[in-house]
Image (tube, rainbow, N blue to C red; front, side, top):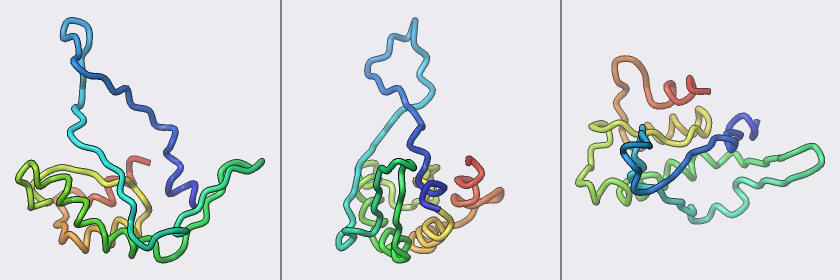
Length: 126
């Protein structure tokens, strides 16, 4: 199950700065990125590389840990842009499985758009 939830580590992004407009045609702009360590989460997700490949052990409290701490991260990301209504912009969370996404949506009071919710859209990408 862990590989299905977090096994997208093979994705690649070419990151550069000051593109040469006559040669390079950037499609997206990376505005902000960060990593956050959730308090009291040590051991919540453990990964081990073995002969069989990557093995993951995930405790059942992970969705709750993430949803209880998501707002601080969103404030840190969007406050410098004067954004506090997370429904007013398009953004995406790392797809961590339905339980995680559902709890995050509930915590930030996400309003599903006409076509789909963030979690449904995210899971369709798979």
